[in-house]
Amino acid sequence: MSNLFSLMCFQGSFTHQDFAGHNGTIQTGDVQWMTAGRGIIHSEMPAGQGVQRGLQLWINLSSEYKMIEPGYQELLSSDIKTAENDGVEVRIIAGESMGVESPVYTRTPTMYLDFTMQPRTQFHQPIPETWNAFIYIIEGEGVFGVPNSSPIAAHHTVVLGPGEGMSAWNRSSSKPLRFVLIAGQPLNQPVVQHGPFVMNTEAEIHQAIEDYHNSRNGFEMAKYWRSQ
Image (tube, rainbow, N blue to C red; front, side, top):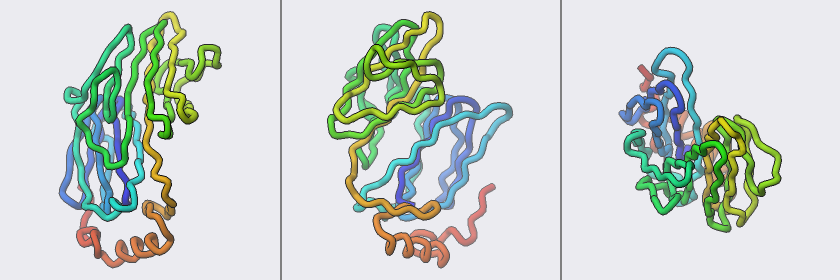
């Protein structure tokens, strides 16, 4: 498995269970972090009625952390640090913004910021020059990069170039703009993926599949576990 997963709930609620005994339900605004490490089997299901919306992020772990023990943690909305300046509010899920830093530790250096910009506002977020970064627009329409760029609507992704940082404008006179900025330090390591398994070499993938089928090396509890 060897990834770090994050699920942020926008609307409704989601329940998590896994074979290591972790379980919990996140509500609107909450975030869960799950480290797959050497291997984990889990389920994520809507927990309520009506519309359920969330955003799931997968972060690759460096080769030295591929076989760590799996883990799970919940970050309640009330515990997420926030900052605000001139009509721009940010929830700091990982990393730092406006001088406020998240307490969340990610083995792969990561920035995960949830911005809400009121109408007629602008903001610039520094990003380490060597990092990769992208934006996903959740609600509204925004201008990114330079002031004369074309507006980008909700449910689109903007990939940032190296060393640019992030500049954003909400040109709307009435509607807020909400988006997430996600950035991370490149690992510069080979990636080999097969199904849910992500490793560095074909041999490691074959070993992970063999371990899974034989319930060993981290998958000892997988054979008999069933979600409730």
